[in-house]
Length: 248
Image (cartoon, rainbow, N blue to C red; front, side, top):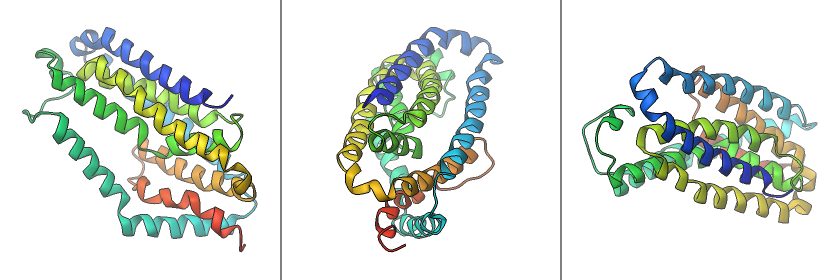
């Protein structure tokens, strides 16, 4: 079913936001419990690496995947996508979040929940859930398979549940809940666009998937703290197999 993974993803963000609101006081008073979301995130990160390895083995044109990764990463580094996204996030934060003394997420709970904390929760959750290889590759895989391949989106849904829980407990659940609107639009547009172009992309689907899966492996390694790869700079590589498969 088209958009099923994205709908499930939005529901997990909603569920994580509600649970985060309910657990916020508990997390703030018992700091040993505050480490539970991070521990769960690490476990899921290992599973993300497994999913990436599984998808990377689908290709029969390893040269296409290699060239796509090298050329795409060079293009991304020249454009410096990673820095542009960081600047965009900082710009949104400045626009919506009033400057205040540096505090930890749970220290925010001790003060009054002003309107600005809603904006911070919205911005933080939206950027974390939208900017990443899983969002793009999950939506692409679903679109190119006619809604059959939802594995990456389901994995992302679990990750986003924990993300929403953490940001909701720190900044309030309303902002985190509102992030489901841009998440649905962002992933939905990518998925429907990929589905419309699936006929054109037929000859390069496996290579697109394998290239994206290797980026997902790098994402998982970043998440467990093993590497510090600039994932956003690798994103142009996902689209290069479309061109390279015409010649190789």
